[in-house]
Image: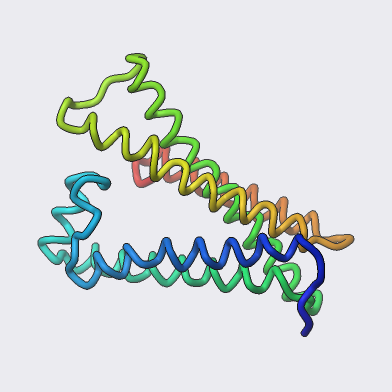
Length: 183
């Protein structure tokens, strides 16, 4: 296993840093802190963390570890590996890119709609909507774009199919969760 050369590998390291930084709040909130959550996250979610609801704490821990897995995938996208590992990395990288861009895009579009008056929210959530527009939406978009860049730079002949499959699967999963009200 060797590190690839060139500027494309930087994107894998950007993904790794993004994933680690993004995991920190999940772990902090799972351990009982609500630092940064009160003003930037939906009040219902803050309440679940404060009340130490077991299923929500499990979601926070799992989410934190998935973000660390994303960081590991970013590191993996900087290295040359065998065919199966390449396919898995490209599948995961393509899926993560679409899922994060879609999710961040929804936050940004919703924030713009609320900001322009085309959509309304409860007045006590207006400030929260701005956090989703200016912080969380761009954060998800940045992670998705970094995953996309790292995956594209990792691709070799034949790998595009796996990136497309991962991307399509992530999009379908996101659409299904949005349609059912889960996401």
